[in-house]
Image 1 (cartoon, rainbow over the protein chains, first blue to last red):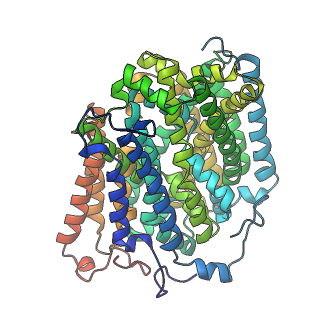
Image 2: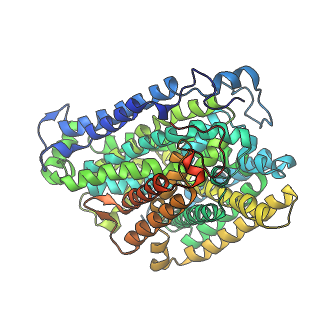
Image 3: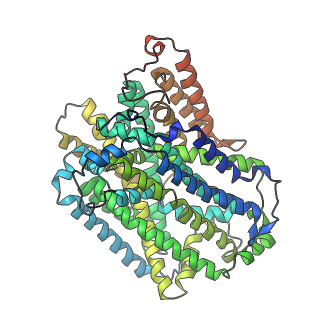
Amino acid sequence: MSRPDARADAREPVRQPWLWVGVIAIILAGIPWYLPEGAITPIVLGVPLWTLSAVGSSVALCGFLHWALSRHWNLVEDDEEATTGPTDTAPGERGERG
Amino acid sequence: MDNLTFGGSAGVTVLVAYAVAMLLIGYFIGGRKTNARHSMKSYYLAGGNLGVLVLFFTLYATQYSGNTIIGYAPEAYREGFAWWQSVTFFTAVIAGYMLFAPRLYVLAKQHSFVTPTDWIRYRFDSSPLVLLSTVLMFWGLASYLLEQLIAMGHAIAGLTGDTVPYQIAMAAFVIVMLLYSWMGGMRAVAFTDVMQGIAMLLGVGFLLAGAFYLSGGSVASTTQYLIDNKPEAIAVPPLEDSINWFSMILMVGIGIVLYPHAIQRIYSARSERTLKRSLQRMVWMPLVTAGVVFCIGLLGIRLFPGLSEDDSELLVGLIANEVASLNVVFYVAMVLLFGGIVAAIVSTADSALLSLSSIVSKDIVARYTRVEDEHRQVVIGKVVGVVVVLGLLVMAWHPPATLVNIFVLKIELLVQLAPVFMLGLYWKRLAVWPTFWGMAAGAALAGGMTLAGTGTVHGVHGGIIGLVLNLAICVGGSLLLRSDESADGGSATPVEHVKDA
């Protein structure tokens, strides 16, 4: 297995500052710190708009992290998939690779 | 709760069925494979070979306990929409993994790490720092285990309407847990996690469907009901609550991933792709677990209005009872949910137990005794784990409030480990002694605040305040330290694969 940062195209989430800015921004957008205390209206789709934005923020965070995991994390995956086979395989675990 | 439709003999039957299933998994997964019990990597990490599906479910069981259902629905009932934060903080846990798991996974494979402390020893080579980290982790795991044992007893007694008394329930399932963990180690734990995960996900889905049907089946009418009867549940909370919301997301997002059993799941992954794909699935689970439980709690406001704080703790049982009365399909689903909740608590406890035993085997017996045979080291770890669980069982038998209050300290302390993992992996200049004193000061401040009853300051949790102090000391101290090791940008131990991020 190669070093974590050996490959020129190695990707690691912690090296993408804008990714973390995005995470914090999405989280902050879902917390109603910017709205007046006690506000309930307007009602949209049967619920207060602020609750809808909180739910939307959570869904957006899930989607954003899912995307970040697939696009910004690849340290040894290519090497492992090319060279390493499963060892010490447990019952029921066979064929799960990939 | 005394006349549960699905309690009594049905509840006892499903409990026995789950217990037998767990024992069979332990026997068939590990009992017949003696090698699984001989080496540390095999027993504690399933050989570092868990595939996507099993790794996903064991990560799921690590993050979500039966407590997530029976404890979080009442929180939503009492706090209202502000408890939606539970969905976000569980999602933030995946961001927490992304901060350090990619690199830690590679290093763990290269250097055969078994316990989280292996990384700390490799990076810092400092006995005091390793010892302090071990104490915090051991405390966190023991507290977590105690909480699960008490939850186990209450869940079974409550959900069977006391057909099975608290103490008997706890003792019986502790024995089951010890047996299958002893036989199968991480493999048995991970495969029982699959069973509990499926039961829990299906059960909460049916519980929500039933609760939604009972409350009238309309989001708009439920909202109107809340506006008319409990407007504070659906109104924008005060600014301090919003600050608390953000603080909670930070603390849980960073803290949960630092539980030793969570870190060991990174080590257990078969490959980077396996780990990544499991986390990609995990990222959606807060919506279908905490989100669903949150909705059930809000619907409970309409179904059972005006419950006191104590009575609201029984909310899930009350709703499940009503839902089970609807028809035979819901009845069966609620029986499965009931077993799933108990199995979820047991399988969360078993992960903590296994991790605790691994720390004893690898970090204490293998390091500080003359026992050199790895199989014997594993056995001693298992025996100490059993003794610790039995000690906790005695404490949980008649839990004295003071002891339980001391043991509420978990995540506030574990979050103080963040610098050794999240900074230590990327910043070479992070030096030993500032890190040690930062961790000690952060843990003392966070622990002191919690024990003094000052859990938050202007909404910010003691754990986060302690972490800020911790970071100030370890970063400031490392920058100021002009020793040879830091002057050239190095660290206490040369870390070949770590470079500044």
